[in-house]
Amino acid sequence: MPPGPWKSRFWVGGLLLWLSVGSSGNAPPTPQPKCADFQNANVFEGTDLKVQFLLFVPSNPNCGKLVEGSSDLQNSGFNATLGTKLIIHGFSVLGTKPSWIDKFIRTLLRATNANVIAVDWIYGSTGVYFSAVKNVIKLSLKICLFLNKLLVLGVSESSIHIIGVSLGAHVGGMVGQLFGGQLGQITGLDPAGPEYTSASVEERLDAGDALFVEAIHTDTDNFGIRIPVGHVDYFVNGGQDQPGCPTYFYAGYSYLICDHMRAVHLYISALENSCPLMAFPCDSYNAFLAGHCLDCFNPFLLSCPRIGLVEQGGVKIEPLPKEVKVYLLTTSKAPYCMHHSLVEFHLKELRKKDTNIEVTFLSSNVSFSSRITIPKQQLHGKGIIAHATPQCQINQVKFKFQSSNRVWRKDRTTIIGKFCTALLPVNHREKVICLPEPVNLQASVTASHDLKIACV
Image 1 (cartoon, rainbow, N blue to C red):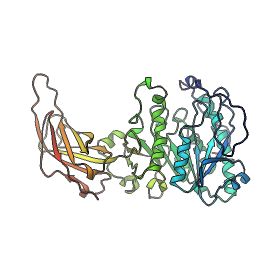
Image 2 (image 1 turned 135 degrees about the vertical axis):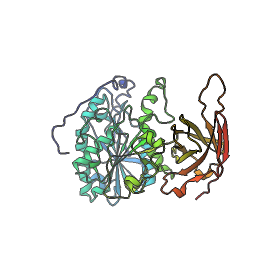
Image 3 (image 1 turned 90 degrees about the vertical axis):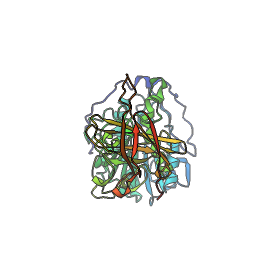
Image 4 (image 1 turned 135 degrees about the horizontal axis):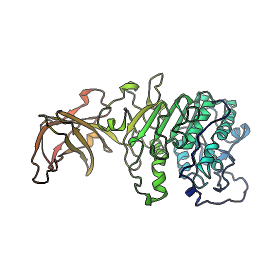
């Protein structure tokens, strides 16, 4: 976006006054240590930017070097032949160093041979959200000036990958616009929603800001943005209410921030672990759970996107489609990854009411459940079941046909049908495996069957 006036609808809302509690205070200036660190800011004076660029290199991942100009870069171990990862944090609650940043840097450097630069704008992001949003343009310009120094050293635009957290994702988007969308990649980790959901593409992260833009959404009903903003947009567990996060206000700060920060922890976990966080395109989360989206043919031609340091997220088509919503389910803790299976039930006879069947996979005393609903006057119902255990290690499947809740006498209704399952993506019907015998179910009675699927 060319420099100039920027019209925005700044939001103050209820986010902010409580955030001013718990400041770490102002430490007196000290001599620059050998290893530089983030600044601390007082929440009442967090308006000036005071931006620092901290370089971390593979040979010394725990020691940040303060770099400002080309000479600093050349003397600090920066390697212009490697890729460069730029991490931009978001709004700071207490004016202190982000709790996740050290682990993020170390994990990045273990996962890839690259220069990692952390952008410390603690002063400009602290105080009230309104003030932090006003600083986005100024910060973006400072980052652009810094990146120009990298280009002078021989770094290519396409080798630069910006990873922006919350408000930092929109900073990355603005930087990308100033470089004409020619930066290699921008990853938005739950891009901020307040002030940006209704903003124009010039004001927020969007697919035109880099050669590949991805966003991981985990808090769309609160601090995160609801709309797609990249080429690929991951709506994890539907984009809100992450498993393992507090559901009651008495949990305090964790209740407010857990969903929002889950995107950061998911990304770190994807870098640390080999199990894939694979997602599937679908029109909506409910349609995905109902088993209506089983492969990645449309629009990705079978190349399902994955979270992590995978080129273009694993999508291997050109040109890239834009603003594609993809969905996946996760566990409540690291490594978060789940396998997704289609489950189907085919009734032998039509019924005059909806048929609800709970399906449970069991493996080594661990169970994973889902529900199939077969609409009245239809024979076929399906759904998605997510399981942390590989499908070939599932040894039993249980069924429970839900009762019609007759209060005056026991429901003795029985149904007969055929059960089938397949691991996603279901690119070919040959992948579907069915129980060899019909399944007989009586209302409210659990029935168990052995499930034998060969490991591939």
